[in-house]
Length: 158
Image 1 (cartoon, rainbow, N blue to C red):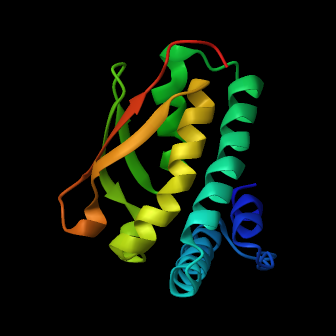
Image 2: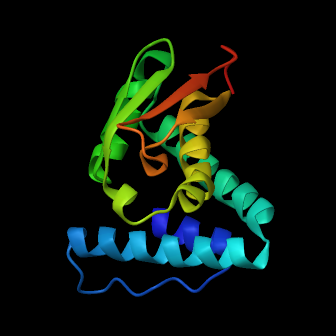
């Protein structure tokens, strides 16, 4: 689902993952997103790609919210589950504060690629929360020990 949403956002062909293990798929996804993001940055298409990444991930977050009946108290727990599968050590509190101490993708991404790809994080978490805004204040890819972000919700159902 994530691979399809990302390929669609980059308007790129979906790479074949047939016969790959989960870990191999994760590495292939990291390489694919890095290459596509680098291309979008070089070609000046960041803004359009950022919007499509956000919208596609927003749909996934909303679907998870519906399918798993995620309420406000569940958003950070669901986020932690999703990110654990992606090799990301995600910790969020009820106030919307997020700390990421380890990120599988940080060894693949430059800070600029990370900023672009994090549009997926924004869309997914806003979709899970039923609205709001995610903003990062620091990132591992910028030389920090951890990523810090804040999920601000408006408190109204979607």
